[in-house]
Image 1 (cartoon, helix red, strand yellow):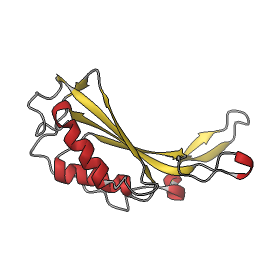
Image 2 (image 1 turned 180 degrees about the vertical axis):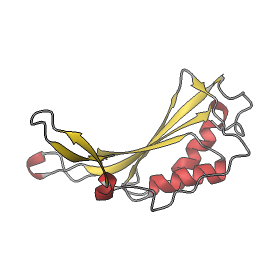
Image 3 (image 1 turned 45 degrees about the horizontal axis):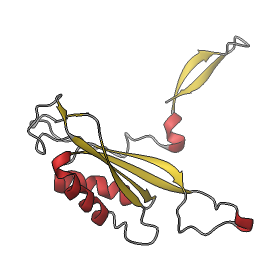
Image 4 (image 1 turned 90 degrees about the horizontal axis):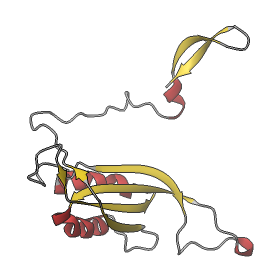
Length: 158
């Protein structure tokens, strides 16, 4: 949690809640994380891709489940005293009230550690040339030896 949100020194246990949301893979999760940081000072958010089904999804043929859709899951650790405020903000900002807008829930954490960033550090900018995705991800190669044949080969490196 940001020290701006909590008076506890960094590294100390604090009373916290975990807000988790599952959103369609349409950029909602990315925009939510940006808004949480810019507007609420929240720096403790995680996002990861998943596959999911919703209650409003049409059933498949012969009652079989429909194909799963890509979704994004966001989890945010927040101070207990701000949990309701931030829960409502997330629901509104992510527009979960639309059809297929996702689901958000809140749970109590047994313990969480305060987290803060130094104030004098500039934010890093990610340039598009340094981000490696897809086919570009394995653009670097290293020499290695095939254990079965003993032949030398170039092997991609992540």
